[in-house]
Length: 69
Image (cartoon, rainbow, N blue to C red; front, side, top):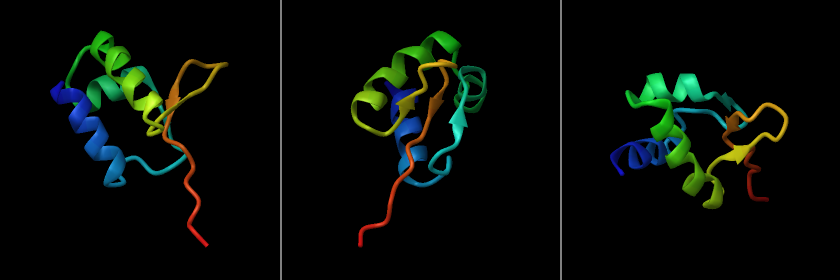
């Protein structure tokens, strides 16, 4: 799906810094797709470890990454 590839690219290129909360409405506006599409595309990205789902708020956040060392 094109929107999933766009979000994946944004995450890997630092468009959304690690730890930033990414709400459904914000992602929908940023990607130019419906909130339903955002809900569908975040699942595979959560499974891939590119996003994390916050249990209490239901929002999605990019994970904190630690530098190797």
